[in-house]
Image (cartoon, rainbow over the protein chains, first blue to last red):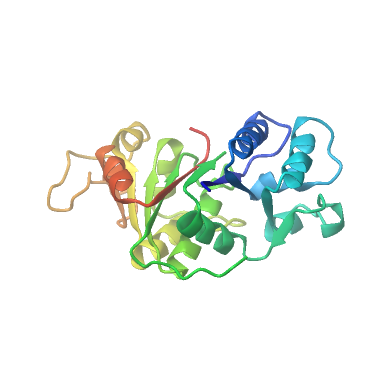
Length: 114
Length: 138
């Protein structure tokens, strides 16, 4: 199965980047691709639990559909987002860059960043 | 996640579009590049648009990671770092025609470890890289 990594460093509601990422994720999954979403920098704001609207709905749907979502612990902590306030099912990593680099270089066929 | 043994021959390329301190993009670039080198991958960085300001000598941020120092460290560890000549020229870095011997456009303002190059430098990166990540707003 083809695998794609999606890296988002932009917040969920200030511009269209997170929505585009969600759209690509959904279509890639529907096409049978293995999808991993990486939340870095302001991208970790996409991990906050209970968000209403397109991004929140799509993050929850992605998790239900088997998409791996990994958030950078350092960037969550910098924004005072505790584990309790992260959407259930999102992995929090203290070695985010290590996991991301390994996935991109060894497992993924493609990587897209926003 | 399952640990995977790295292939030392593989190369990661990163293209940076943003300046060093207006966003976290350059910070992310350095963190990803460092980790890739820790894991034994080759790293190539191309600075484009406002990303060329990351090559400025004498950066002295008080509160942020010093991107200039990070680029110097990465280059010393073997990363290849190039910047776009047109973007550099537009921002006042380029002082003369291409120097064949130094293999870069001369600039006393840019870090010695960064080669100011034509966009063909980036094309060569694409040809020789396994994966490419772009960071920042173009």
